[in-house]
Length: 209
Image 1 (spheres, rainbow, N blue to C red):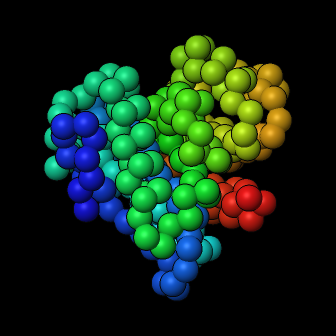
Image 2 (cartoon, one colour):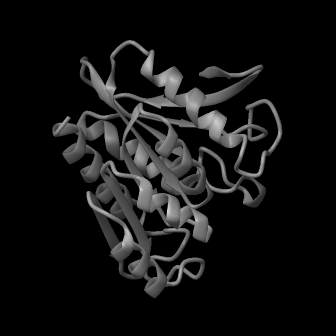
């Protein structure tokens, strides 16, 4: 599937539940393109495969300059436009409930998803997996008043556990967060576990909308 973002075309892929209906949807933002991140990432795929089993559609896409997507890497700034374009695309798709739209970002994808969720009213739920955020990003999180779920592995070398826990204490409700024992930043062998936690958050959240 391709969808427009300004004057470029981006590549994406749908994961629909087997049933017919008016589904909630989650757009999934992949890790850092300059370190091999794309929409075929192990965590991205695990989440996209888990959601439809619980009657939630998932849409993964390549940021600009990745795979078949046009344009060039934008340092996480222009990528925010890619997320907004994905939200426009999924919200206008038949079989999707435009009032129940969520976003999940993994690693670099979290740093792109968060500012979009703050600005874009269409985002009703936000999940951040192993979020690599500058201090300003954690400050942004304090301003995000809708339901949010964050998770890291306790072996993640990019995100010091004590700092993560402190940031989460400082983040206002509604929030959920979880530390997964044994997992590092890349989640090898823990994909199903993290996908299950993320999926449960969205299922519960969408059920309340």
